Image (cartoon, rainbow over the protein chains, first blue to last red):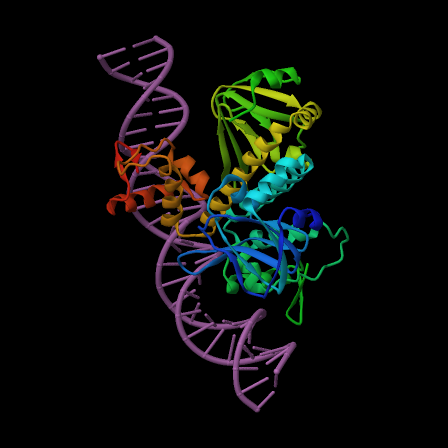
Length: 196
Length: 196
DNA sequence: CGCTCGTTTGAGAGGACTCAAGGTAGGTGG
DNA sequence: CCACCTACCTTGAGTCCTCTCAAACGAGCG
């Protein structure tokens, strides 16, 4: 899904090792690089006045992040942080633009990436206006189910806190709601592990 | 901002007059056309289980809408409806792709459009997680202020219901909150008209 | 063992929602 | 010019649900 590494290096890409929980760029700062993850995991998030955290997106190996503000030269709307030790390649802004200009196939590539991003965000927004905690969590869980076709319940690899941050709810609300959903046999909880 | 009309017509674009309040495409249906507004106004929205309406975006003359699902061949996440009598040009999917393929300048065009769309949606999401009505409304109002640089209060051309649908709140909440904001001199209300 | 991080539970408060009923303004037709 | 209509705005009372704060339990790890 990402751009070929050799290609990025040719265009001045630099590979960096970044430890867990390090900030890559901050909300409101201006973009200067194109970032692509070689290994690890990066989260883009916001924190509101009441220290409530909201995760805009999570990205893993072979994915790029933070391109939209780069393309339109606007400040980052959120902060990027590694959630695992990660290896990331970054390409300076101007080099990146030159590369995209010279390689038309990349343009179609980014159109698809960005279109997907818009699509996912539309789905997420739909969910966020519901202030019914049950619906929000079920919708969130459904966004995983997509790939897993079977009726078997699947282990959800997120902590309650992460689910809270992704749905815009509070941890306690997530926990209490999950309990209700368990009573309705919609989810299953065994040893604190969540299945859906 | 939109694509040249002659160009769209060359590629099989068809111009249609569409009266107010007519649905252009429905949530969950598959995209078959590229749409661009010649004149009028189109709103993309969702309705949740409790008939609460959420406006994903409003588009006016010279803007296109509904491209993200078209590019990635996914069902529309929301419904498009005209909010004014409108004139719209639509280009069949395959023609549209051929056109974009043949005209590289269009690719950069769509990259920018889509990047902007992602950016705006990120900003909007930030706002939606706050369940503080006051903050939601102020942030919403600020998204206008951007262009108007002056300190002068500007007339807001949205009905309370529209503000409600855009912020994910209820009309009554919007009204009561605006009143509070007036007491704090943050907004001004004269003859039911809202200034900010 | 003692630390840290994540999970639970309880009690209480606040604020947005719901429902129901009027009020207001602008446009239309007689 | 007025009665009427429709769309939008406003207000009140009461409920419900999420959030808040506080405390404690559980698991994994040096």
